[in-house]
Image 1 (cartoon, one colour):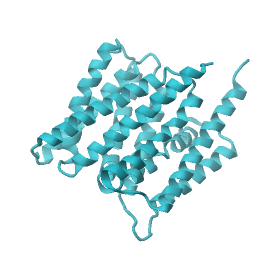
Image 2 (spheres, rainbow, N blue to C red):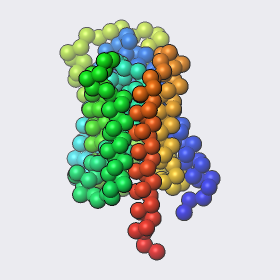
Image 3 (spheres, one colour):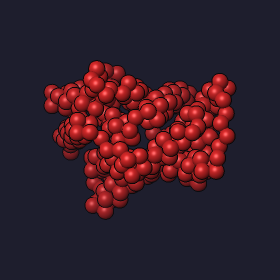
Length: 295
């Protein structure tokens, strides 16, 4: 059992990871006003791949001694990351930061649902009800068919589907495969995909301000990946995992500071419902694991 200081350290690393991811989203959203999406992904991907390559070397995680099955899973995971990047950033460019981030908070619920559908995992009625309530919260944010509906909300939902695929596949990758190595191939795949897509997109000159934004975004997303790896080495997952929802707090604050946007009441209620449902699902899973753990 992890001690208190390890749990606190893990929680702080998770908060820092969510902050880095959200600040990255801010700079990418700022870039989206002036540069094409694929150009942003290509340039950031080059810098991010380089940063993660350096981290792989530093942490001695660079290896090609990976089983064929794991290579296939890494490829499938990369596909999930490519889809998630395209759909989430398209949504982010066309809707408020907090709204897009709120929809992403469905992830723990969709992963639990994916476990049921694809891995025959069994859940009780309480967690099933929590998942259903969480999706009810999503409808409060998306509000299809209601005045003011933003169809880019569906892009954010599709992104959730791709991230769910990525996370479910990650469960099946062998534990002997270094996390940073998997992250490197994901970053590289997004870069290569975007480079190919740029063949059909006009290049836009990158000004000095946008260069600063790109470098900052690449540094932030690399730092976020590193922090995510370090989190897994600290404390108890049941204590640390709920702190991933601090990403929503960061999105609310940064969305207001950088874009002068604050979500309406229904969006805030919907986000709250999703978060509470996710927290309950995590808590129930922890309780069940504790009961079934051999003495």
